[in-house]
Structures are given as structure tokens and as C-alpha cells.
Image 1 (tube, rainbow, N blue to C red):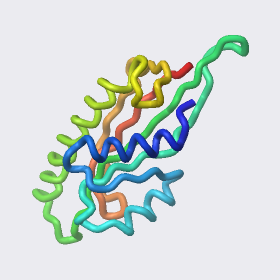
Image 2: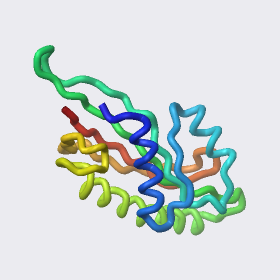
Image 3: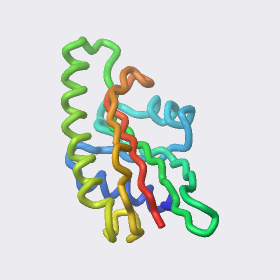
Image 4: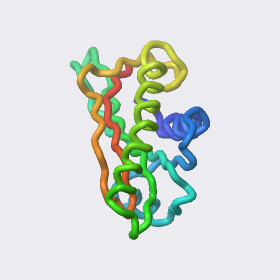
Length: 151
């Protein structure tokens, strides 16, 4: 099980590592997420949010592993007056950041790296999903979801 404390540290490290991320925070659920988004300003763009994961078990009682279901958002706050072209530009700008984020995770989240506290991690094949987010509390961007198996 990846600790919440370690995930919060990961968000701070990622903010320092990836140019363009100016704000990072961990949230528990959608209502807290929306509350944080409403407090943000366009000067906070781009923003990285992590969601407290779910932790199902895989295996039998005598031999099991944790599945860490991780979800992250990379978003930008926009003005109500933004045009469709501005929305598409925001989506492209955040897409580039998302691509760098995913590559950072893939390079550092597997094996005995320190990204998630040196746990033996396995990025579950086929679990990585990136999908668009539009007009969530006046923010647009992308959600990134993936599962890591830890021993």
C-alpha cells in the first residue's frame, strides 16, 4: 500500500520536476476536489491533483499483493469568456504536460525506484488511461488513472 504521505511528497516532487505545474495538492473526494478548484486562480495554472487511492487486494490469504488504484488530474483554470479556440489551446497545453507526467511515472514508478518509497512496483498492463476533463469547476485538462501492484 502506497502511503498518503508518500503520494503527497510525490506531488511536490513532480511539481518541481515538470515545468508548467505551478500548484499541487492531494484530495479525498470529488466535493473536496471541486472546493479546491473553485479557490484556484488562472495564475495557479497548470495544477496537479492526486486523489486518495483505493486499495483492493489481489491474490489469496496466504499470498496477496496490494493494487494501488491511482488517479491524478492536470488542469488549468479558465475564464468564462474563453472561446472554443482557447479551450483547445488549453487542452493542447495540458496534453503536453500530461505526456511528460506519464513518461515520468513510467520511467520512475516501476522496479526498485524511490518514486514510491522503494516499494517493488509493477505498473499493471493496460491500466493506464488518460481522458479529457472539461468545465470541472471552470477548469479543463486531463485525468490520468493507473494501477500499481505493490508487495
